[in-house]
Length: 127
Image (cartoon, rainbow, N blue to C red; front, side, top):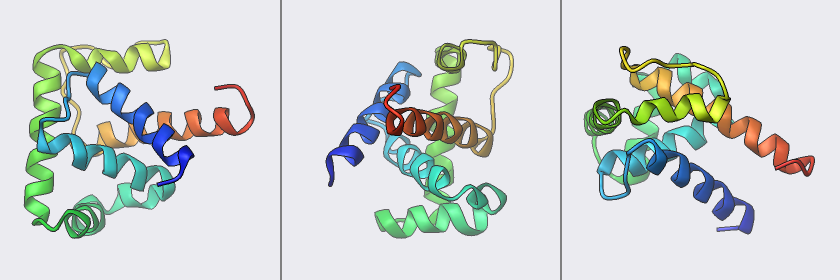
């Protein structure tokens, strides 16, 4: 793994942990990998169950339904502890209130967007 990839994984790890999604949960690894896939190819968001979950499942050697369930569980835990409010800190504005639990695709999409912005800032020397 290259230094940039390590820095990117550290950035995503920090975000997920701040959201209350910890590395001891299976959904953590799947979610982090999903974010990187979507950041590199946003068309995954239009084919989550047909393309994204199967590609993650293939990478980890598990079934697609396990990917969906584990990610949903991790998001649910974050929601229950108020961790999704961390997204507001990332964007500096109210994106979520704690009365709404996003779908897997919504959360992956918004975190992938932030990850892309972070990567672009790094490239131009702002981050």
